[in-house]
Length: 246
Image (tube, rainbow, N blue to C red; front, side):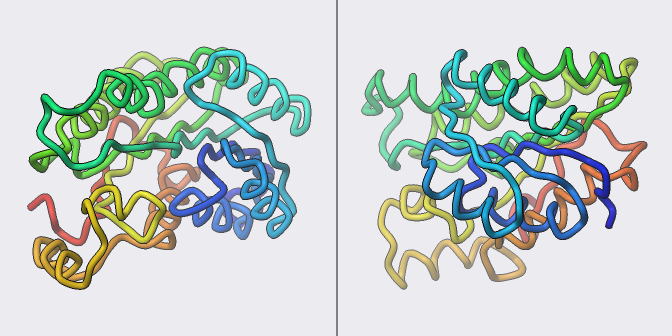
């Protein structure tokens, strides 16, 4: 029960890595808000773990403000924030990505971190404690061709994590990131362009441990970084990637 007495928000918690993190946090005693743009998915996961659900568009200020307000009203406080919601553009040459796609990727992957900070950092500062976890990517460390603007958005997230950690440390708020390799999530097909046994085999050949990241892998790492066991860890971007970035 490493999160007993803690309250958490997990964005993009209705599926994939986010749902895995929600389940693990609940197992360890946390009360969890499952926030997702797909309310049905959020409600299903929340019902499974005895949490609460909220529909949120993490790229919209008013939506994030409402999510934060609802969580604080429901739990009395928010101890943990996991910025997990993310999207990508399809693999293609950088100059062929439309402006609309670019804006959406940066809004969901980067602006969302700003918006959740805007509406929750003050609350955590006032409490003198908090843990923020940004789900970045190996793409921000070892970028792949044809995912240029997605790679850049995740690199931004890693830099944001470090600067947030430095600024918020005196207030008792820790900020870390996780860098997963691709996993069995709704984004997998988008990363690979198409999902075929041949393309999977080619992608897996770049991962020394020979498999994708799973929601359970991410959940266990997230649990550690958001728990008091990691009280001396801030500003790290931990790779959960089977050795891909070596």
